[in-house]
Amino acid sequence: MGRWWAAVLRLVFSLRLWSAAYAQIYKFEKANAPESKSLSLLYAFFIFDHPNATAAPNGPAQRTPYVQFKGLKLSSTSEDFTNDKLKSYQGLQIHLIKYEDLWSQVDTSQMCATSQDVAQGLSKVQDHLIIRRNKDQSFEDVNVYRHQLRFGEKEPDEKIIVKKGGVYYLVVSNCGSYDQASISGEVIVKNDHGFLPANEYSKMPFYAISGGVCALLLCIWLLLCVRWWTQLFNIHLCIAAVCALAVAESGLWYFFLLTWNSSGTHSNALFSTAVILSVTRSTCSYMLVLLACLGWGVTKPILDGSTLCRILLLSFIYIVLNVIREIVLAYSHSQAIPMAFVLLCLVPVSILNGGIFYWIFAGLTGLMETLESQGQTEKLQIFKKLWWILLIAIAFAVGVLMAQVFVFSRDFPARWEEQWMFTDGAPQVGYITVLTAIMCLWAPNEDSQRFAYSAQIDPNAEDQKDLSAVVQAEAISDDDVDVIGAKG
Image (tube, rainbow, N blue to C red; front, side):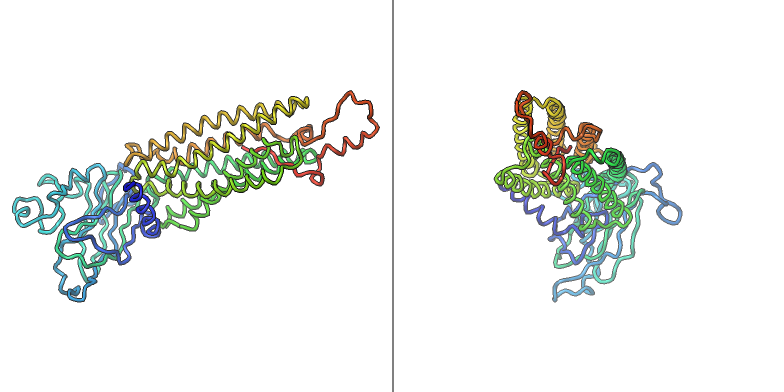
């Protein structure tokens, strides 16, 4: 339980620092310095390998990954020690250290340089963090990028080419004896494509393609609706609305990533809106399928009030849990999350998904039995095909869940570049595939009205006088009944 609560507190604290940390620009805004003889791991930067990452004669080459230490300075928070008195203090430093090399280069039992360590050549300056390397190697040769912090005036900005890509920790060390200080300034990391972290970059073209595919599906659907507008009922409008949500979602995620890439700043407003839109799209999709499988607009004109209340409550819970899940998955790129916390966020949503699918299949089974008993064979065939589509979707979703739990239970996977496929790629591809299948299933045509709600009569009945009542009962008009249909 201790690790679980620590993970929760760490997440809550980290979310408060989004504006400072959730980007490739890390801002120190009078941040407290680490305690004496200690170091702090603040953030993880993701950088692509670049074959031409070499220095130009007058500084860093164009369009190569680099780290920039900008406007950094220390300020004393003690009245007894002013900045002038501490000008010679050299114990505080900022480093970028490659993740897989961190604990081989930094020995926590002997990490701060003493005069004896300087004499042995382990460090050039006393009270510096000892980075283990050969004497003929520079810090850049071992993928370490260091910047000295000083009290008083800002240090000159420093820009250094990053020669090797990977995951880099932002480390602040204090090997001196004074810790009543605050840090101001920025650490900027820029890839050759822009400020977007390397593990997020592939999402940008993916969402552009995803949005284009959904827009194409929407255009085709609208053209079919215009062609057969006299045959439409509410299910066609519902599918169009869900498809429009998918287009808006992909477009917003693309715009959010594009803005982040160009500015280096993670927009909380755009991120929150995109998450809410994604969750809303998922919730509407599930609930529309559930309503159709419960017979709304198929075998009955309306559902009872208690069922509708349960659906509304389920929708609210689903939205809350999914927003939490999306935030955790989005934030997990910057630090490892313990397995218990991953399960805490993933399993409840998965259990809820399982419950929704159980309700859908239970309703679908009952609906098919009703249609079969009423002899509505055309409707029955439609829902038999829907049954198989949903079964395949469940199998795919279970596979994605298992992959997510495996991937996010590890500190940093060896192939972190593909991590986005499990969080964004696979679910989005699965959703679009199911949506396409259902659009094909319910595509408007000259016979679409046959699938709307209708009251069945006994063909052997003798009394056929009131045939107009039968026609009226076929409720194909929006004024007669509210028909809600399936969605993918």
